[in-house]
Image (cartoon, rainbow, N blue to C red):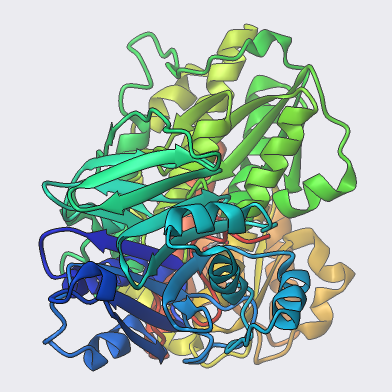
Length: 605
Ligand code: M6R
């Protein structure tokens, strides 16, 4: 969480830093701050200009005078971990003399012990943050060379960090990484550092991704990359494939809405070139799948819901046993995993701390690892044995939408690919139907106005229940997560048959219950569950692919989606739930792209 950015170049730093922070705001948005190395005075006298606010980057922007012409600066947008959101806890943080400025993303786990030592040595702390210990530690070791002081300080620090540091008197920015993403954008006579490539994209497509325990030193028209022992490191310059326009709203009110509507195209990109004319799935998976006896999938949040659908698909199509775990739980239960196991990790961002920890646990124990990732060059992408990229394009809205549908598409492709490698027979009809998926998703998007009418009826509900069965049970979970994330309405997902084992106690005339009731072999059972809800006065919303009298007699709130094979229904059925959550949240006037307390990329454990 948190976004950091640093600029050293030939244009005014403020617009670059503010624009970058706005692009990084999805990582946290409870407070923001900036520090500039003032020019116009000799470097050794260079002064630090500082501004901080509680709240959004737009508030920070308002208080910076246009007279600030410095071309060197660092900035931060925060998602609070230690210390409440406030101006004093906003970054940058300083040493006692206010000469060393630090912005930090991550968690300093031993900050308590370090703070005690530093306080005993006379350091006075201004904030409640863990991050402030870094600036005081650097002060402790500073003897006229910032880089050296940073290295000495970081030797004592435990935890994760992406850091950008400046100090009065030295015309340079020192950046260091351990466990929090850092990308260096290399421009013409300018260099930009950020937590995510989206912030450097307007200036350059040439980037270098830092690995753990590496640092960059930016100086006039120059950069050098070293390890923490001071040795230069050779790095490959990558090229960002996304265009700057992909990270704009393009006329949509919110990124989330744009991303919902991008799904036909995004899914098309996930599929592109991966199904050949003989119905063979082509994926570059450099793992001997014939040696795999069991699959374990780990993920968090929405990606965990994809994993649950993946279990269903892989077991059904490739006929191999699959376990699914929350990445955050996996590592701490000393999992039984090793040779013969395939550990799949699913992560849109490729930076989720819990996912990375689970991946490393599985790798250390000898499992083969496969990633399903959207962000090219992300840490997960670099650490897995093999990967499948989604090519969904950047997802900026905090609530994941197109990444989910593309993850499920990729899992479907992988299940068939796996089956074909094992010599399992795969129904050709399924493979040919996948080609129609983008068109079917587009059909659902045409229902948006009808879904808006349903949203108007239920926007004031306090609670919601989502019910589905089989492969659509995880869809119910995903629908409930989407609603609670962005509308703050309490929502629960259950397998429909579980309702009578407890949740039915909650049903009354105030409780909307959304049923995923597309036709499959449990359809008649789902109808009975709807009757049970109606009998208790509950209000039914039904997602169906055949609107007959059986449904119409039970509810007027019917969303009709196109018919498709069962394996494809999770993708089709999720789209109306995304739209319902979006419309409800938007009607409630919530900032859908930045819901309270959340951040898109959860880089702390
Ligand atoms: O980047 P990841 O897919 O690893 O992120 C996992 C979760 O943090 C993420 O899906 C989260 O639940 C979203 N806010 C869901 O909308």
